[in-house]
Length: 352
Image (tube, rainbow, N blue to C red):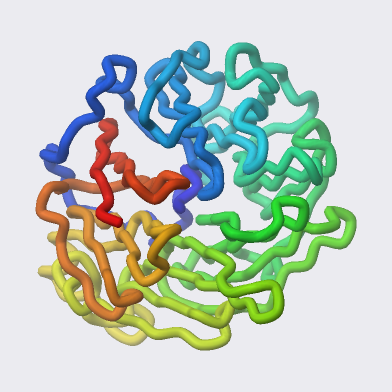
């Protein structure tokens, strides 16, 4: 799940011109003109879409108007409360252009918004109502709140000089003990992946680096197994392919088999990028896990949707979708995949 913030440095190296998608458009009139999807918790059946602001409470089957256009570009809904929202954004940390915006909070699903006094330039990343924890980011790193976004403090990244470029909550865990995956990208283009434990906001723990790579990334994570024997599945989409870990980042398997036309054949830290690959563009821009079949992974790219049914070892193109995909969302029942292409929203049924 990408978080909707300005990419850091070479993480923004997406040069392909998106073409019109030809998938099945969402049929409900409210969403025909939807321009984007709001990041949603994998466990939540509530989905928001931006046109004005539309909400579905039943995994996208029916929709209702939720309110006016939100006051800031990036909106998130709480993992465990679909009516609790945050909205905020900031301009690129490497640019002097663009106004630094304020942060807003809604407790009624976007019908009304309250200004969060004193919090400027924070983009919200995740929100949990029961433990009352919110996570955000600005140009200085992570921000954390212990009162669902009403007041904030700094949560430094383990490495200085990195800008938060992606975040995803880990699905399938107790929402009262939240955790997530965060990617930081340096000005030179090196990125690192960390796991952040948010169970206690006063003692939030960020792991050591779980992966190092070039450019930005799309990430997803899910807790697997039973109470007595559990593990965490992580998926990391990079400029060079998709990495999958079944043991919480201890070991990784990387593949671009089937993704050759949308990824790089070389590691940019080791040698120059071929001109042909620069011209056609590259990058995995969104990833999503099937909650019913963990071996099935979806990858949005600079040019089209790809799917793996063998845990990321091989990939094939979903021919119904073309163009630059900025967000993927699998409904909590695992029956639909929502896709944001440019400023259009589509969905595809998922075979169970």
